[in-house]
Amino acid sequence: DGGITQSPKYLFRKEGQNVTLSCEQNLNHDAMYWYRQDPGQGLRLIYYSQIVNDFQKGDIAEGYSVSREKKESFPLTVTSAQKNPTAFYLCASGQAPSYGYTFGSGTRLTIV
Amino acid sequence: QKEVEQNSGPLSVPEGAIASLNCTYSDRGSQSFFWYRQYSGKSPELIMFIYSNGDKEDGRFTAQLNKASQYVSLLIRDSQPSDSATYLCAVNRGKGNKLVFGAGTILRVKS
Image (cartoon, rainbow over all chains, first blue to last red; front, top):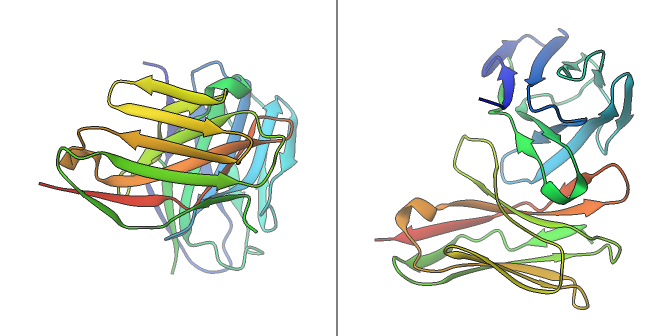
C-alpha cells in the first residue's frame, strides 16, 4: 500500500541533543513537507522540498535542518538551537497543488 | 490578522443534526481550499477540497466557497458521534503548493 511512514512514533531526548526524524514515502510524490503542531494550534510549516536536492525554509525553520537526497526520503533534524522542540511533527507529501497533502502518522518529540 | 482563521469551538451538535464549520482567509490570491479531519493524537486526514465558488458535495459533507467574501465552510449532515474531531481548514499560499492551516475547530457530536 502506498503511504508515508514516519518514525519513530515517540521520541524522547535530552536538552542539547540533536535528533533526526525519519519520513519515507512510496507515493511517487515530488513535493514533501514538514509541519509542527503544538496543542491548540494549527500546523506550522518548517521546511518543504519540491524536487530532489532542493528545499526551502518555511515559516519556522530556525533550529531545524533537512535533506532531500532521494525522492522518497525527507528527514528532519531538530538541532539544539531549537528553543522549544517539544511538539508533534508531521511529514506530508503532495503531487499537485490541487490535491492537498497526504500526511504520515507523526512523531511526538519530547525533550526531557 | 492570521492567514487562516477558524473558531476554535468546541461546536456541540446532537446526533443527526447538521454541523456547520467556518473558515476565513486573508490571501485573495488563494486558489485551493481544503478541509482536514484530525482525531485526537492522530494525523490530519483530507476529507474535502474545493477550488470554485459554490458548493461541492461528497456524501454527508458539503464544502462551500465564497472567494469574494474570502470564506470557506464545511457542512456535515446527519452528524454522527464518529464525526467528533478537530476540523482543520487549509488554504494554498503562493508557489510550491504550500498549505497554510487554521488552528482548527473542535466538533463534538452528542448521542
